[in-house]
Length: 72
Image (cartoon, rainbow, N blue to C red; front, side):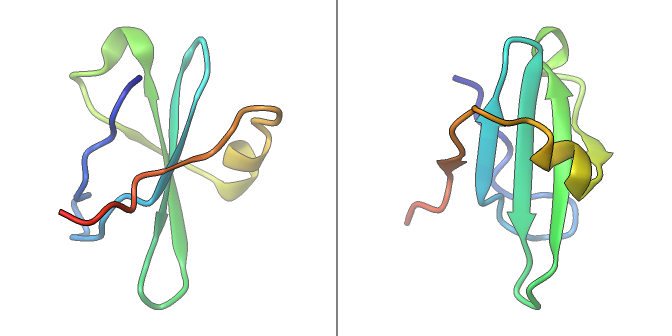
């Protein structure tokens, strides 16, 4: 299972992710209620994440969303 970076460039902790055969999708919840979304290809995991729209994230249906919000 791919683990997204805990902290994104904006300094916000990653919150949720979904994983498919092609790649992984991440949803980041900001303190002001806004959300940003990212995607990374499985064969390109070390190259970084790409910003995507909320619609693209929501279009991935039937895949469970996993929480990354653990206490460290």
